[in-house]
Amino acid sequence: MSVSQLARSIKASPTLRLNETAAKLREKGEPVIHLGGGEPKSKAPLDAVLNCGAQLNTGEVRYAPADGLPALKKAILRYTEENYGRMLAPQNVIASSGAKQSIMTVLYAILEPKDEVVYPAPYWVSYPEMVKLAGGVPVAVTPEDGSFVPTVPDIADKVGSYTKVIVLNSPNNPSGIMYPAEFIAEMVEFCEKKNLWLVMDDLYNRLVFDGKKAPNPYDYAKQDITQSKLVVVQGVSKMYAMTGFRIGWALGNRELVEAMTNIQSHQTSGPVTVSQWAAIGALSGVQSGIESLRLTLENQRNVMVERLAAIAGVHVTKPNGTFYCFPDMSAYMKDSQKLAELLLERVRVVTVPGKEFGMDGHLRLSYCGTIKEIMDGLERIKWALDPQAPNELILGERKLVRDWA
Ligand code: PLP
Image (cartoon, rainbow, N blue to C red; front, top):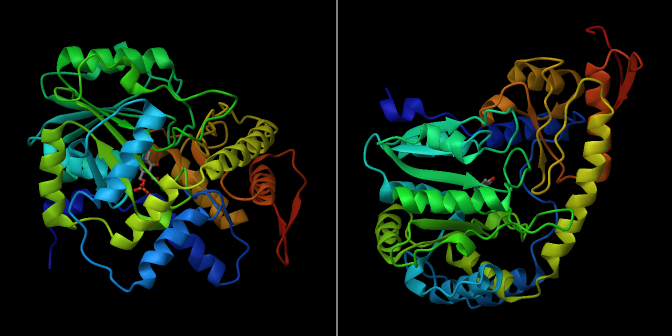
């Protein structure tokens, strides 16, 4: 049996693969610390659970419309008005099985074969694979100055006659960096002028630190929603800690939303009805959970940055959002895949190689676990890498002796 050429060109999601590896090691009783995860540890909001539970108790769980239940779309519209200051119509919203499906469906709806999709590096691991799945060509832009913040000329340089879409994710997975408002403003203007689609992957825009607020792309849009090619993608996964519910959405012009709805209707039908009830509960209920998650993450970010900075040779750019940090570890090893393997093998710490995000020499570390996990994980990393660290480390019931540095 041979699978298609397209299937062969698609890599497994490295983060999901790492979760499996960590789970298997844990099952064997290994003292694994998972700094590779991409989900907050807090519980889903009570309103989500209650709304979902109440509806579930009726025992009537039916198909939902392909673009989502009207009540969910209404809740999303209210959320959009409150948080983006935009009053949109139900025809401008489509709910999907996670933001992942929203992005995938946007690409299916707008790409012609060989159209190019441009996005800055470091980038979320799924963008290149999604673009390939939709028949397009992924084009990553690495900021000239070696930072995590692209400039408009960096991007413009990669935009050509085949470019159809620009995707921006800010605050960014994996760097945790929020792009400045001026950059977002210029990109909105640039895309309007060049007639390009601009997909704003805003999944982390409520998880921002140091008193900052994520720029609102609609503030800079001159075109109204009927002609606009601006698409905003959001979801409940990160801000409400509801990753397992799989609900995300996209906001865009009617023609796009209609095309996406047609695609979704043949692909998955509407998102899982039970999950939509939960999302309605989360969006309509008490919102304080977002702020308490944000505060917890800010504190955890501080601990992680402080500990990383204490490892000689590690260069860390302080994240101002998300729950990721993307330190430059190239002083120890340029090949991030090998470094991640070494850390897992020797000290049982799961990290994600920067290579997967288009920037080798870095590791993505998550601070969405507990403070203890962060501190212990970084102590182990320091021990594994830093020749100045003591020669022995107690790991579970084992005493490790460093014999490789
Ligand atoms: N976009 C980014 C930048 C992400 O990091 C993720 C999840 O990790 C997603 C989209 C997908 O989120 P969802 O769980 O809603 O599918």
